[in-house]
Length: 402
Image 1 (cartoon, rainbow, N blue to C red):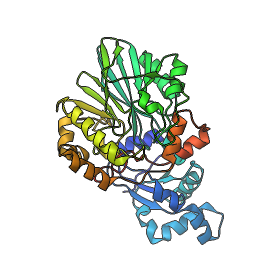
Image 2 (image 1 turned 135 degrees about the vertical axis):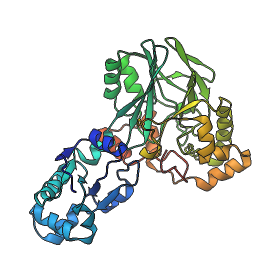
Image 3 (image 1 turned 180 degrees about the vertical axis):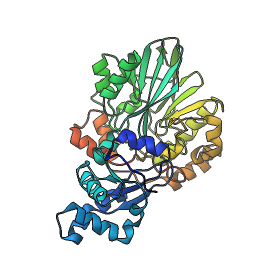
Image 4 (image 1 turned 45 degrees about the vertical axis):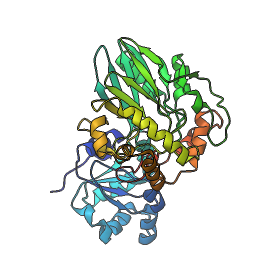
């Protein structure tokens, strides 16, 4: 039986349905190259059809949307659209609204993604990891990018770790939770996304913290022009009744950090849900891989019951039932390919790294320049740099991104 659907789904509604494993067919009317490079993914593989609207226009020779929709339904590729709810997706939500409206006229229960892939890319979602007077951790994610950040608080005092590109969601979250931010921290100088770290710190009137090794561009060897306060290994960042212990864990970058509070480890870009971070962002994959191995071995000493909160995820399939991304270190050591490799010798680990390094996107060099103040980028340029999913993780099983 065909179900009726709302005429438009917000990105939030789409995320809810993806996490709930609801069945629908996704009709993507963007150009084939865009679809091939980046698409919506769910907990389970989605039934997707890519039929660029420009091709339908050419085939129908008509400017009437309903004629183009008929062409689509008559095409063998459009057969799945006849017996399921349909979500139509385009770049900005305008073409998809036209197509979904035409499909609805022909009796197909269709909806359009409001704002298109641009809105999906910008979606921010929040999940509660732990809540209490002594320790509260909130996980902030961009589902389309696979990027995670965390707000850690105790008795009303908060630190924001690895903030994503937009300042407003964090300001709104702090106000809603009645938290006073005391620190803004980046675990490293990011290459996959533009950080709002310095802007957020300025808006809040608090220090921005970074390891000094990451205040130099690894390719350009130019010092950052942003203001920051240096972090060091073993430093304790006070937060109400608790503190964040700073762990210097070089490998992904020379200044890469992780943060421990009680049983929780904010792993940043060291350990991900199904993979580990790549160590070649400075162009020295073999040398940094050896550093990475030592850092991971150090983190093993924290104990198998440690709850790891990663800086990235590969897909919604890695989320728990509550939509959050976390796992114990012990479980990860048994299932995470990178951590399994790290339990072998340094030589074997380095060989594993060199055999599985994915291609390094050229734009990552520019993103790091932006994050260090060495390059300026307006909103359109930032959106272009961040297009698609991140690739901060090693290639291989469970490591489509980071």
